[in-house]
Image (cartoon, rainbow, N blue to C red; front, side, top):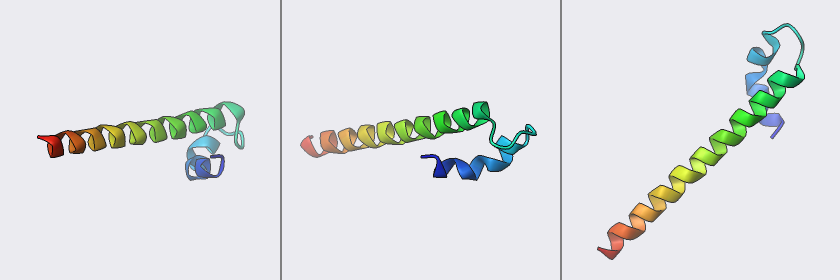
Length: 55
């Protein structure tokens, strides 16, 4: 998960400190939130597909 935060390194370093703790934690929280949203959308899509097949 830490490796995925490298894509945000420009934004993290914009504050002036290299990989400040606060910026790094926010980046990890955003990544986790993104994964949760992707899973939720996937589950909703799968449930809708199952319901349409039954009808």
